[in-house]
Structures are given as C-alpha cells and as structure tokens.
Length: 117
Image (cartoon, rainbow, N blue to C red):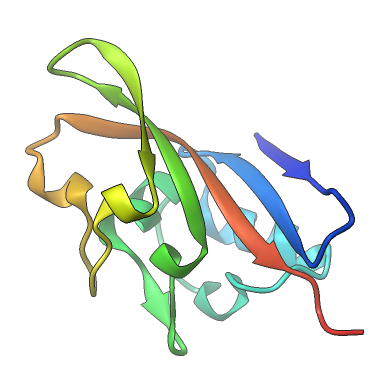
C-alpha cells in the first residue's frame, strides 16, 4: 500500500507499507514526479529492508527522506513509532539493525519533494 498525503505544499508525505518492493515504490513515486528516492532506484528488497539498512546512492540515503516508522515491537508485542531522529540513521545503519529483531518496520512515512517549477 502506498498512500499520498498531498497538502499542495512543496513536499508530499507518502505512507508506504514495509512489504512493498523498493523498486516498485521508487517507480510509483517517480511516476508522480516526486524526488528524493529516485537516485536509489536500483536497490533490492522491500521498503522495510531499505529503512533497516538505510540504503544510499548518489549522495542521498533513505534516512534523508524518512519522517517516521511504525514497527511491531516483538518483545512487548505491540506497535510503536519512531521519529526519524529515533531511527538513528547512519551510513548503512539504523536502530533496527542493532535491536536483534525486536523492531519490525510495518509502515514508513517519507517526505518527498516536488520538482522546482
């Protein structure tokens, strides 16, 4: 599932399920003229993997466009939310890589930009 939250501003929020293939996500949002993920088009896996591994290419990383992540907390058996800062993105890294499978991304909120007019 990919859901657009378009308020007519410079940026568009996009909520995407973690199980959506990354290539499909990039093709979908690029087809709507949205920028931010386009340089990472060739990355494998799904959106959840992209967030966990903080994919990067062309000077852009997934962490640069993530606004928040909803996860399943397998330890406490409940849903939880992470802000972009709480995701602790670094080169090829995130909090999700260091929690031994505790947090499983379910959906991701991304902020993509419109091309300049």
